[in-house]
Amino acid sequence: MAYSEKVLDHYENPRNVGSFGKEESGIATGMVGAPACGDVMKLQIKVGKDGVIEDAKFKTYGCGSAIASSSLVTEWVKGKTLEQALEIKNTQIAEELALPPVKIHCSILAEDAIKAAVADYKKKNGE
Amino acid sequence: MLRLPIYLDNSATTPVDPRVADKMIPYLVEKFGNPASRSHAFGWEAEAAVEEAREEVARLVNADPKEIVWTSGATESDNLAIKGAANFYSGKGKHLITVKTEHKAVLDTCRELERNGFEVTYLDVQDNGLIDLDAFKAAIRPDTILVSVMFVNNEVGVIQPIAEIGEICREKGIIFHVDAAQATGKVEIDLAKLKVDLMSFSAHKTYGPKGIGALYIRRKPRVRLEAQMHGGGHERGFRSGTLATHQIVGMGEAFRIAREEMASENAHIGALRDRLLKGLSDIPQVFVNGDLVHRVPHNLNISFAYVEGESMLMAIKDLAVSSGSACTSASLEPSYVLRALGRDDELAHSSIRFTIGRFNTEEEIDFAVKLLHEKIGKLRELSPLWEMVQEGIDLNTVQWAAH
Image (cartoon, rainbow over all chains, first blue to last red; front, side):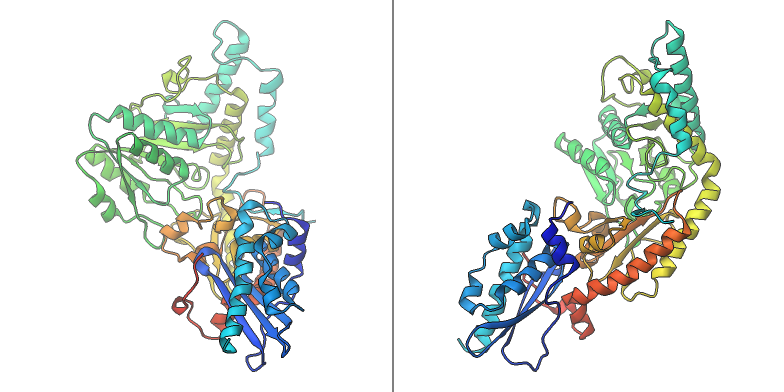
């Protein structure tokens, strides 16, 4: 399978890999996918007091397109409010990375990861 | 000097041995005759070459040349054997037995027969990939007419107990077909001893050209088939179509070399496989798929837990290998063979198949070991599953959101 240059770039140089310390404040985590399906994404966001996402980190078990999709999402959510982050759609991710049809599920999973992280934040903060 | 990428996918196909290519070339331009032409020297010359190759194929497996029929490859041989025997003997019964880890050429052929009124039992395998002979015996019914079991599995390289299955089939009067595409040149095959009635061969897994194969059809006791390809009555009516002389010559030469060099070659390849396995054995959470004893020497199928197979393939793109990961297949399902071995889906998604060949070297294996060490570390740093396991979380207790 041929990969787009953008997928290869994110795969070779993934942005924002890692996890936040458990003691840090404003952290929320979205974990989506399942090992049985061959894809698990963990997206963490660090939200400031003003409600803006200051930082994001990810870890992904999955194919190159899944890794690239989650890497890209960590870049995109930074500086956005939670509501703005929720506006990121899988089609934008797929378009940016030029994902082939069989890899669209990777972009859907990345969108789900954002939703899950935002939901976790809202739950933790009683919204 | 190492030439990259390194080819370690010899169960997908092998390069044509240069000695084989040299022998084929004259049959394209100069000796181009149709072996079926009986009226001139061009035809006689081609026919002689075809018969010499037939003898070589027969010699590798200790059969009579008259028992060898040319086909386009193992897929066609499987189709001819299974459909041909099932249809011919359908008056005796309509039940077949095969195994869940067979090649698709067998499984899909059986599915087709099911659509045409046959019943098929698909046997499970044990965790080591081998069939349980008691379970096999229990599956036999009075109306069982055909059993099809592969000699060597293409994904995990395990060798099925063909001799034992053959004895059981012969005693019960059941036709026994064996797909030996992955076995030639790797294991001894003696059809004077094995009670096998039909056996499929391919040239391109044994350093011959693609597009040519053969089917062994036993004469004593005689096995009969309904032809699947009709036409000019070539190959005693079993398989019509003009013979591909150059391909056949290539297969004959490839099988001659396999017969003469098998022992020394398997020692070389087995040593490289053991070197690879030893080199990877200090990586934690690495699992070999399939039995290591009842196994061909060139296959190593390994799951690197918590690292998804396709991302692994991207990371080790200097190695040409294959994976049981769903992402490498169109279906998004992980390897059905590894699942049949009882591997959970995560380990099936994390599998890599290395198949070593005649032309691999120690230097190449050492390069592979070093590269794998580097990349597994990097990918596990990326893996949330690895992180959870390091934190002592049992992944089986996690409620996953399946998608």
